[in-house]
Image (cartoon, rainbow, N blue to C red; front, top):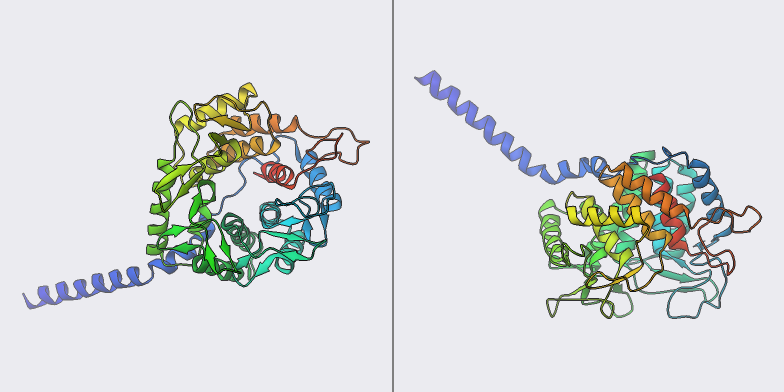
Length: 378
């Protein structure tokens, strides 16, 4: 009997010690598994389009990039408009380009892009969303979705190349938590001048996969993710038109759109973010596949699903391709890329050859081209 109790006591001690160890290391265990949660390419270069990818990369590097980073538009302006124009550079562009270099294993190019981003956009609270070379003006406001994308790119670089990228990602992730997160709420931007955030969340800013990579206790991230998932899920419009609301206002607990219209790109980014954590809706994927197959993925819709324009975009089909890759649907990926290719400048005599833009007006936008570049690599 004494031996039996001794054995039971020893077994109990081992079980208690094991439980304590698992609980005390829960957060560190989560962090060590970050590499497993970083999205890898599923279909990139499998469609025989690598020459197009490389031509687009060369165009961006040689004609759409300056000392401060990727130009917002190929055409120059006085950089004085309310929205970024001309050769201004955006944190959005930095993150997209860095993700592309990490996914395609181009370390030197990644390091150069990251160096430019730090020099041009890094601030005490994160990253300025916009910099004007002509005015030498760094705007004192961040866009949290762009900060999250840059942080994610750094973790993807750590997976691809090793090194200290993860340490830098942790630093900027801490700044996101310090400035853009309040009481399990994520806010679009933080203003360094006034030391304040806005009072709403744009749904496509809820980048769940990137939030999971942030350096924070798992219980805190779980509360934040649960809150965000509730907001985004409740912003679903309907099975008939399975896109998402635009913005959620915390004070009024209500959703706001663009004057009765829904942006396709914003909704697709929301679907992509949900797909990355396995929370996409079947109706959204079915609708997207039908629209891609028919070539009817328009830029804006009325809330009842009627197109508000007949304009389509490179970026919308690029994001659709990323969704296809993320959920393992090669047909959606391939169909979306084929549609995207319709907007490629094929004329080799044009200075815009290989890019996605308007050869007549020479309007070539960074978001379209960087989204296409990333889609090629997915």
